[in-house]
Every structure is written in C-alpha cells, then in structure tokens.
Length: 207
Image (cartoon, rainbow, N blue to C red; front, side):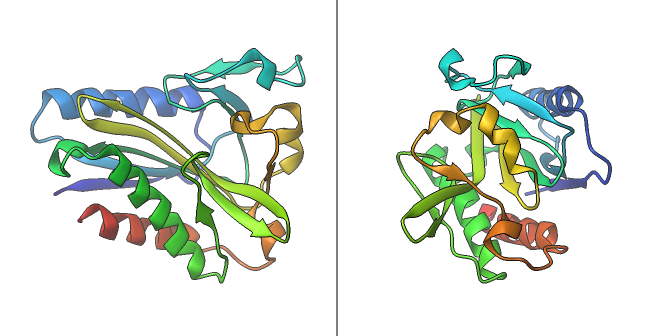
C-alpha cells in the first residue's frame, strides 16, 4: 500500500485543491500504479456547500456560497483550520464506507487524546463533537464522496480559527449545536498536531 503524503505550508486556493484532488481520483481509477493521497493544507476564507445544501442554511445572504461535489451541507474554511484531503481506494479495504468514516473519526479522536481533549462521534450528525456541561460543539467536520470505490474530499479540524464566521450560516445544517475550536477548548500549543493525525490516520488505514 503506497500513500503519498503532502503538506502545503501556504494557504491553497479551494478550487485549485479540489481540481488536483479530482485529478488524483481519476488517475486512481484509470491507472493501476497511481499512489493514494493524504494532503494537509489550509484554505483562505471560503464558504462551501455540499450535496445536502439548503438555501435556508445561509443566514447572511451577502456571503458567496461555493457549491461542491462533496457530501454534507454548508460550512466555512479559512485560516486557523486544518484541512485534510484524501483519495483512498476502498477496494483495497473491503469496500466498507462506514468503516472508513470510523477510521477518520478515530484518527482525530486518538490524536486529540495526546492533548487531553476528549471528543466523540455522533451517528446522526457526522463529525467530531466536544461536550462541556450541557453544551455540545462541533470541532471537526467530515465530508466524503465515493466514486468507483475511491473515497475523496476529507475533513476539517478547527484549531485557532475565527468562530464568528460560522454565525453567517447554519453550519452543516445543525441548529441546536454550536461550533468551537481547540484553542477555545484548551489553550495550549498544537504545533505538532498535523504529524500526530498523519501517523494515526496511516496506522488505521492499514487495518
């Protein structure tokens, strides 16, 4: 199993990233020797809407909504948020989409254990959630599409991003829960978090 790991230091334009990702998906489908991909990056400010997008999820009608091919509804990407895109061949992993989503969830859960932060998954509301008292806030979002058993798009993890951006939308179409980031949960350094997630994700994908 060969997976290419990419890390982009500077913010990457959303459409440039998606075009590269979709090109890799095509190559995986058409060419046997193409490497799978895991790509860590950050985007400039952008609101994106998946296949489940609803106009009612936009509270500030002045913002630009960028429709995408991923699953899920509407979300925001921007500085301070870690993005992980991937193109992974599920035909090498028993063609189990639910298990693949669990791998992603567990890679984030296990990584945040290193920082003494406990997050949980929710079968009805995909993503990772942090509970504090009676409040439940999303800290990581997951959006996946599968084409000929190639799983692609990825997840985002809020580290120290501007949470005010989410007030212009109903993030992921969920009204009764909030959005948070790691710095708000616990003020500490998250400098090595990408390396930790990468290690956990690679290990779990070997299963």
